[in-house]
Length: 84
Image (cartoon, rainbow, N blue to C red):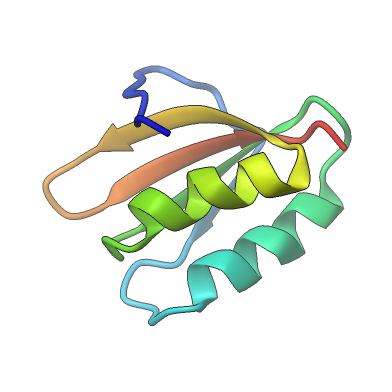
């Protein structure tokens, strides 16, 4: 899966897990997505490079939509739309 870079996505919920170690990016994603309504957007901020593969893969596996990623100098912002 190739990464899609996006700008100006308006998330419904944001969670900051910058500086947290693996596997927190997936554990927090799973926890937060359960709290959203269908079609709401979650933004996850992390500096973990492994998330570049892990988060889009998790979306594909779970049926949620990976909208894209925004990269800053300090961290990545991943955008996931709840579909299931």
